[in-house]
Length: 102
Image (cartoon, rainbow, N blue to C red; front, top):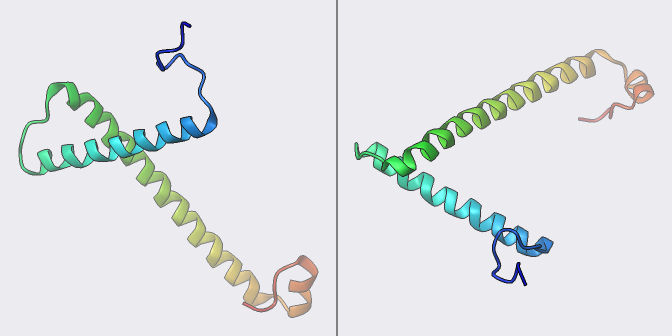
């Protein structure tokens, strides 16, 4: 069978793919920690890893930026809802489906 070697071309079930994804995530976390430790101690990161490390750092930067933006928007939303809630009567809150108790 052309696919019996278990290579990437093989069809995999959902659980097997989930296991591979978990393993990939764990290995990426380990490599990230190792690269960060090397960098923190002034040790040059091997060339064959440096490209991955640069791309990983950029992905982290973008993820952190997205998380901060999400948190900022959630804070603005909560503040706006609080202001709205404070200005409406209990009857108005009930009419638009806002819980009258906080």
